[in-house]
Image (cartoon, rainbow, N blue to C red):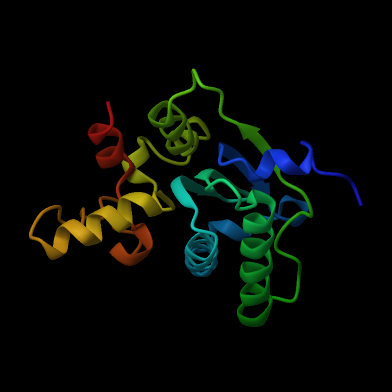
Length: 187
């Protein structure tokens, strides 16, 4: 088995990473709303279990982009492993017997000069660059788990409200958050 890109301790130092996870043989499994829903649930569970912050996600048809941070001492590789195992298990059980993910993933540790909002914008704009949407808010498979947590806490206090689903293609629970709303809130 091929070794991960960085030395193992680098993934436990509390850095923020931009990740790309490809589907097996680049099959367009993530173009299916039900598959995205089960993957998003698995991502949320894995992030909670590892106390990770998922600042941005974008499910493209054959890969997933993430902007994620794990606290010092927690292992990013274990987070990804847990997410991939859980989502693949649910996918095989509910949808298909074929593999969901490639064995490895691409990672980039953010440097001090790279700003979270800029990297998040880049991730949310992937569907626009790929010709899948006219603007980030029109793409239903992107958002932020961190925003969701803040939105849920604020909604209980009468603060932020759940953004409408501008694309109309998916229910608001899957939409999770509007990328345009996130972009406008960050400087």
